[in-house]
Image (cartoon, rainbow, N blue to C red):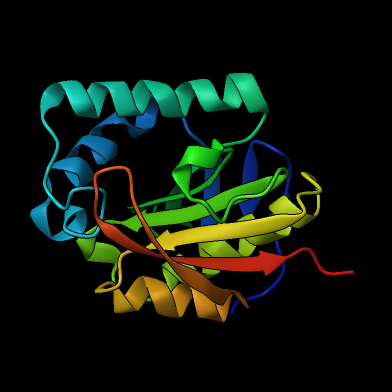
Length: 184
């Protein structure tokens, strides 16, 4: 992992990344991710989204900040300004996984293919973990990972997360649920 996190609620900074509050500026990158079959093979049903799904998902992500005061963050590489994807903290209802408890937050990350293999997911997720256990005082983080997504499983493990078990996602897909309790 890279160095400490700095910044306020709207922007988190790591050694290499800027994690900004989700905004209208992220619509193009979001659309590209949702249309990329290689990215989407590990999300939900494993297929790209149509225009209505893309628009609805984007609006939900904007609304999270208004409702919760946290949510999805756009990842930019500080040296180049390259948009690399996003990292997210979400409140989920208990239907999301039978392993959810009150006070849990979900952590997730989607990266553009151009950003794969550089450690950005781990760096961004570590910053989001710090925010979750710090500013947001959450009791436990969970991550839902498709079993075939070895790269995301490694990110979860680098965060200190442990496999809680298997479950079924909303689209009927098998998922692995990882968890990490708030440090004492």
